[in-house]
Amino acid sequence: MPISFPHDINKAADYLRKAVPMMVQHQIPPTPENYALWYNYVAAGNQALNQQLMETIKDHGTCPRSDSQKLMQQFVLEDALTADPELYRQVNSVVSQFEDLVQETSSGTRNYSKSLEDSIKTLTGTGAQSDELKQIKTSLTDNTEAIFALTQSFQAHINSSQKEIENLKAELKTQYQKAMTDPLTQIFNRLAFDEEIEELIRTKSASFCLIMFDIDHFKQFNDQYGHTLGDTVLIGVAKTTQQTIAPIDSAHFSRYGGEEFAVLLPDCKLENATTAAETIRTRLEKLGVKNKSGNSTSNITASFGVAQHNSGELLRDLIDRADDALYLAKANGRNQVHAA
Image 1 (cartoon, rainbow, N blue to C red):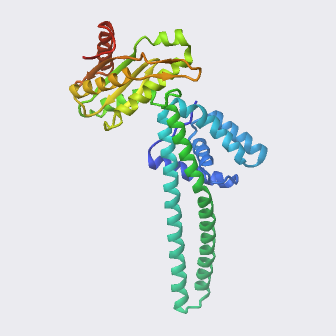
Image 2 (image 1 turned 45 degrees about the horizontal axis):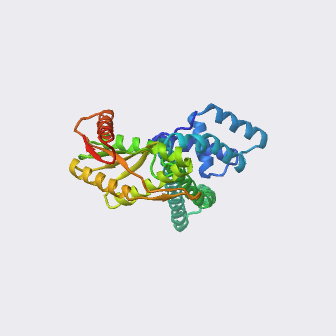
């Protein structure tokens, strides 16, 4: 069961107030990975993690950094983020909330310390010397010094953790990008496509178009020359298409599956999308590739289906219409564009 984090800032603050004292009790540095683990502990979000944390505390009296990193990798980064991009945003949100809350806490503590210091100066300036007043002065002085020491210690921990927070954010971003990227062609994958098109429909964006295209006779490349040339063809098609649509604002290009690709064009009419598909088709028609084994081909073509999203249309219906147009292009001889 992967770790989950609430987005609500008040809930995050409540968990912060519960987690930090426990971390102090067990001498746990307030690093991002430690906070993420203890945040989940107080939220009771993962019993397996909680059990391992307690066993580690029992064995060592604390949770060494190496153990924290292993637990973070096991319960957060390794499986969950690559499987669920939404979790990336949740974890990143919590890290940002933690950073903001810590800064707010540090600022408040410093303000309180300054207020105490000013009060001592005011009392000292009165010249009063009664025993009761002396006790108040002594108490305020002792408490102010304690608050200052706590503030400085806490701030020192935060300063040392700042770089780790930045590193964790960078790691989360890397994991998210990996989860959304096709490893062969290095363009967006089906998961990224699904998220993008669902977002366009959910937010009721202005009219957008979907281009679906499929490399013609792709199986022949693999059968005749082997999969290495097939992979080279896929990479070449992806690179050429990427370069072709680069001037189009907000165009989203992904490998839909196998030898099939998809292009999403926000704020685009059917006529313009059809023109864009035709431009991609003609450039692919001129493409030639050669793999490391010396095998080459210049016989690369693709068939295209184009559809414009209708207001209120379901996602599945839009994709089906683009697919139908694509199959019509194939049935009519391939290497052509058809609009739904």
